[in-house]
Length: 341
Image (cartoon, rainbow, N blue to C red; front, side, top):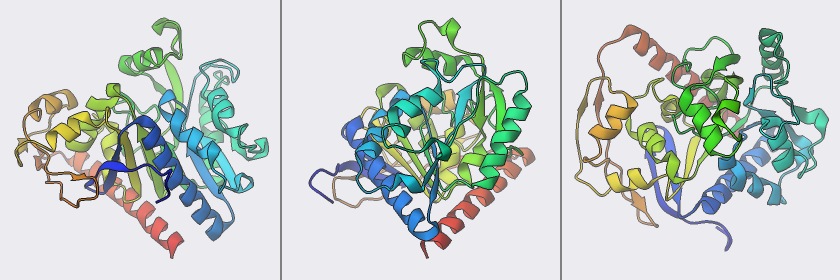
């Protein structure tokens, strides 16, 4: 580790998901950028190019700045995708995700526009055609790396809890944004009024995101603390879509101290509590406010996080989704290992 490289204040795993906690959001963003830089270089060495999906949100500012500062990435060998866009919003709108990525990454690193794949959000007259067109791009150039965040409601991309589907048969779809998601866009300063936030958006689906061998998920800030708690300690279900990350062997979650505060607090409490039944994310957050999730690895000391056992009621549909999610992530992990070998 170089002198300028950030140091973790905690490092642990939950199921297959690796978790790293840093003192501030700059450290978390820098650490994620270093890991993605290496993933891009590894993929370029193996295949000559890397296909990367980028999230567009203020939570990604420090991470993207780290990529821009990198002198080790050959951007001529990168194809850039993004994961969601508002329905009906033109590309020059201040809240457009296409504009955000152009201004925070693509233009700054000189990524040729012929290597940029963007969702044409303004094409709202035939949204299905737009979805199919972008899906064709994903099929033609399979994604190697996904750079994501987690929403305050636990969403991945715009897969909010009401519309998330671990068995989605498509790669891109149009969704109605739930109120919590729209409120977050307003609070992030993307819109002057919550009424201005679009009600619908294009999004890559959960299976499309998890198909990538490498997932980097950057989640800073105190408003994300409850979503992080549920992601790491709740049942794996569409009630909190980000819980799907725990089944992916190539996913790493980068947190700052504020986003991790509830998880770090849990790590200092008594060692075990059994949760019975299928709990909603809100009930779960309340029910485990007292018990511990085990010891964490702090500093350079190796200590083991304890498991939180969750007993679920039998549900064939839910079990089918868990099996499919496991198979999808296993394939992505196998692909990651094959590429490294």
